[in-house]
Length: 412
Image 1 (cartoon, rainbow, N blue to C red):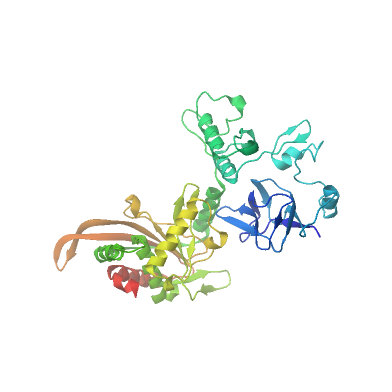
Image 2: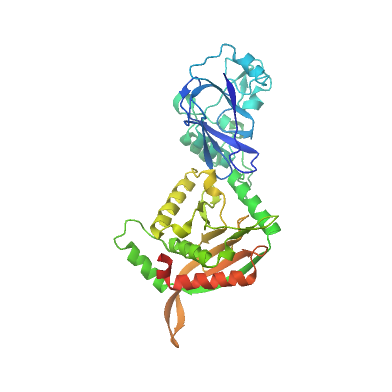
């Protein structure tokens, strides 16, 4: 029996997601747990698997469309099922008018273009095909993808078409009539439309500063031993270890030794965790994401390095899963690779703290009453004062700095 596939709530409290692409063609069979579609939230890409074997009778929304959670996106049937009157079946299921039917199935529908985002010609909706990557690139550039001429198979819009459109739009002689004047610009400025991820990051961090009472602790650590340990670990090792990997392990160890930091604030209680789940900040062209490493206290340094590298690669490709972006009590963000000596970061709610890590620099230090050259690293801890008192944060900072300066303890 045919049934509707609805947009799932792929993220907590999400009200909308983008149908990025269909993995199954119409009238094609699929197996249980096979991916039917891929949807995109503000920060992640999520595959939608089939609950049971069947056939995809009809897609109800085009690729690239924003869809409310719970809205129908496809009509599924039992294995081998065929439908003689699609319109009647959809009406029976509560859809009086199919939201998305390609020509020549649907004619004389005045609002069809508005529902599909495609232009109508002589009363017939012309469906515009574009790859998910092309749709995302066009959306982030503020380009109406329906106005781009596709050069892919069957006129499909692909990456090179969007790149060509962007280049054309940035050319001073580009005609307005071509429909490519989508960014607001003048001789002194250019407006680049916000991406979904940029809007999500802005909203979350604004709420954090408004609702979370931040306080800050700063510390400086001698990292000569840490750098020496890193060189030894990388000498012939199969996995390259970064300073940040060791910092993540030291932070997790500090959480184990100071469990009062491994908490978050909820409206009803302070929630304490038995495992240490830490986020790592990763910058991408689309914006900042913070995937979570689970049970870091049980991970080796090499497994931390491997996981962080995997997160970074998939973040840049927009392939992080939603569940990888949720949870955690603490974040580590590092701008040291850019030469930044010291900075303070905004807490990623509902986490309780974030550690901002600066560059390791050679400076004069006092050692045994004598001034000599040493390598130091400055860190700033931003803390939510609701679940964590100043004394607890200070104890955590002292513990963390001790671990960094005596890095063999990190490996214990």
